Each structure stands twice: as C-alpha cells, then as structure tokens.
Image (cartoon, rainbow, N blue to C red; front, side):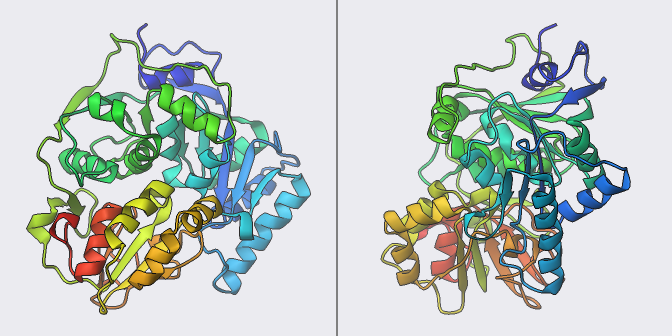
Length: 420
C-alpha cells in the first residue's frame, strides 16, 4: 500500500501491518516527554498503576520549563516532585536551572529526537518534532505514565491532509505566516485528529527552524501531527545537533492517498497576524495596523530559536521600543542565549529597551514574566491567543512572526517591518 509520511513512520514502530487510516495500532515509542506542569500528574499516575521502574531511563525527558525559575511555592513543589522522581529513576535527561530551556526547542537542539522517531509528550506542542520528520504528538498525563512504564502506546492511524505551498516568498514573510495562513484557511478544527503533511517548493527551501515553527502549530489546526519529509537540510541540522551520520531519506510515496490537498500560493502576500481570540482569526497586518499595544513577547517554543532572535534584532537594531510598550525577549535555550551574546544580539535588544529574560515558557501560558492586565493588548510570537491566555480575561493577544512583533514594539501599535 502506498503510504503517507505518518503511515510510514508509524509502520516502523509497530509489528502490525498498517492497512488504513483509523486503524488502532500498538506502537513502540522513541522518547517520552513531560514538563513541570504535566510531569507530576504523570508521576502520580505512574505510581497509582503500581509501576516501579521506567522502561528506559535514557528515553524519558523531564523539562522544567513552564514556571522556571519557580515563581511561587506551588511551582517549586511541582519541580520538587519531578526532580525527586528523576533522581529515584536515574533519568538521564532531566533539565532544570541553568541547562534548562523550552522543551520543544531543547530536545531537537540536544539531539534527543531524530527523523523517523515516534515521540509522545504530556504537552500539546510535542508535535514540533515533525519539523525534522518525527511522528510526535501530545497526550494526557495518564497515557504518558503508561508509556514511561511500558515504552509503548496505542495510536489511531490518522488520515493526512497534504499542504502544498508554492510561489515567491516576499521579503518579510516567515514560517509563522505560512502556518497562520493555513490555520486561517482550514480553521482550528480543520485537521482534527489528522496529520498535516507539508510540501511544495516553498517548503523544500524552508530551513529546519522554520519547519519546526510550522510543525509546532499543527495542534492549533486540531492536528495530531505536523510532518515534513527528511531531506539534506534535515540531516545537516541533525548532524549539527548531536545526531551525525544519519542517512535516512523519508518521504511519502508519490501515489499516497490523502484525505484532501490544500494549496497556498504566497506570491505577493504580506505578513499576517492572528487576532483575538482564535489562531484562525487571521488578517493581513495592513488590516489591523494602528491597533495600539502595551506588550510584545518574542520567544516560546514557536519562535524562540536563534533564527527568530536574528529576525527580531534585524528590525530592532538602531531603533527604540516605544515607551508605552514592554518588549520581552526570551531566547528559548541556553544555547540560543549564548549565541545571541556571541552575535551581539543581546546588546541590540537592550539598546532598544527590551527586557531580556530567562529561557522559559513564562508569559505564553499566562504563567509569569509578562502577565497582561485588564484591557491590555500584546503582540506575541507564541502559539495561542485564547481569551485570558496571557492574563486578564479582558486582555487581547495577537499572534505574529518575530519581525512583525519587533516592528510593533517600535511602532507602539501593530505594524509591518516594511513600514519602519
């Protein structure tokens, strides 16, 4: 049977023959992930089911990224539960403090996930790893507990939507815009329990960090996974990040059957933003320009990588953040932080008047380091803008790429970098 990317990867992790979409299969997992919010719930379930040892101490990652550094007693106790469990089980990949970063940037960066892997995590944005050709998806903490004990999980083979992106990429269009355009076209439930498989000339030319950004937001379209073929760019990225020698080429079969094909032409497109309170409420920047803002957040598992920092610095260099705006910059891992220092980007951010913070999820989930007050508006490079997501229920979040976020910080209102 000709297979999609999703079917091919799942086939490699099960002894059953993958025959059709909707089939329930038992799969071996490559990596199991949890964080400081979801980890303690999984640990409680792990103990509740009578498990005593994890299936493989090298294939579990616990990343303390959501409330780091711990903001209060409750969050400190969450981390304590995870830390004690990691010590008890001898878990190799436990991250807290100075070596910790935002989990979905950290794991690919450290070479802990690779093309063809099957990764499950107690975080909805686990789908990020599809950017390097892994089938990766979020699950509840009880399922994660079972996988930590058994090294296996069950999955329903998802139907696949093929997304073809072509045309000439405009100067200020970024991967974030491509994903927002797709979500705007199909809606937040347009890919419900489906795999999104990306291809076309624009995708072939897109760097791996851009692919990771797009795969990250597959869940914002309801997707089970977001997948990119494994090519020379993928292998080069993995070689640079602790997985040298990969020769895997992984792509869908030419005659694979898709549930539907969505085509997007980016020629002549301008940058977009997702307006409150849904990632699918997508409009061109020119239609929402002049909307005043009080905060900008540049970071998160969506856009906190070094390419995102460079994009933001390109716009901010030699300019000042508007006095009425808090511009918060959060490089997503210590490696990204150090690279920003090496390239002089930190100086650019601080000269512009930005607040540079730790490697944390923080404001994305309304956790800390950037909570919105009543009626405040933010432009953020994060992935969700639901009502109250970043603070007050009367606040508003506009999702955008780093170049639009940086330009908006300077303008004091939603703006395209092309207008500066």
